[in-house]
Length: 325
Ligand SMILES: Cc1cc2nc3c(=O)[nH]c(=O)nc-3n(C[C@H](O)[C@H](O)[C@H](O)COP(=O)(O)OP(=O)(O)OC[C@H]3O[C@@H](n4cnc5c(N)ncnc54)[C@H](O)[C@@H]3O)c2cc1C
Image (cartoon, rainbow, N blue to C red):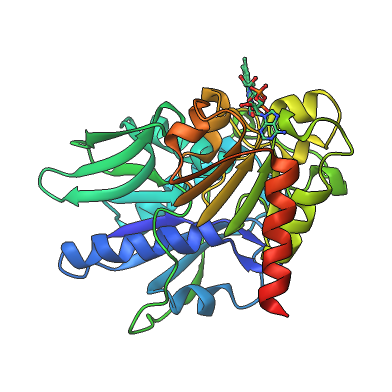
């Protein structure tokens, strides 16, 4: 049995959770078709059980007490452990988001087992081997999970989310969780949304256009913003750009910003320092634009254009417009 901690919003199940359930199906198939359950903690969007059923989830264990109204890592971990118990699961998974990693680290501690974060694939059941991103995604590591349950999170975009060939039953089952005061000692007490806290879809964007110090100043982003719009992507920037106040922090990519895994990343005037690379190493294709051919980003990129971003980017924009016309 496999149980997946699924994160939701009012709109439905988040994409990384759907990717995680998709990977869980591979695991299930390797194990002879063991059922996949999910655990949802706190208010659930309408139709969550049928949305997950389409991805092959048999039962959604729903912890919906008042104490789960706002997020607490410890309380959510208690719910995940309760769902594992209820489902008899030998594998516990979650998406590799900040929240998923926190909750599963806490759950693994409660279960007295190790946890592997940011897994991209699994390599067999006996022994149970996973491959995961380490050093901020700059390297891959194989890890054996010899304890049960095997607990791990799945890196964003490690797999494409895909509905199951055969939908599962998808029943919603209330989950009783016993919480102690300690479980609620650290919790979110209120949520205030500001547009600047929003990443503008950066983390889940399929195309990201990046800009760094090479932009030259707050007025140097016109070309990259236009390219972003033409490609229907998101803008991501380096820390230099946010530190200098040229762009808001919610656009920052890297170790202290967002981790992105787009199909295409186009970093312009970004050197590719390790802290920036930590946030973009999972990009499938990188097209770097930089005046310095030896910049780390240029040497790691799939394609590199040596040139001034203020000339190259407008030329790309012009060509896109010309072809579309
Ligand atoms: C603890 C810690 C955490 C950090 N976290 C992050 C993080 O999350 N994200 C992050 O990005 N950084 C982070 N940093 C900072 C990081 O080390 C680098 O300083 C930063 O990424 C550099 O930004 P940059 O590439 O824009 O600037 P630079 O390193 O100065 O590079 C600018 C690049 O632009 C090129 N260039 C200049 N003019 C042009 C032009 N006209 N056209 C084309 N190319 C041009 C240059 O050749 C150069 O390669 C962190 C650092 C620390 C210590």
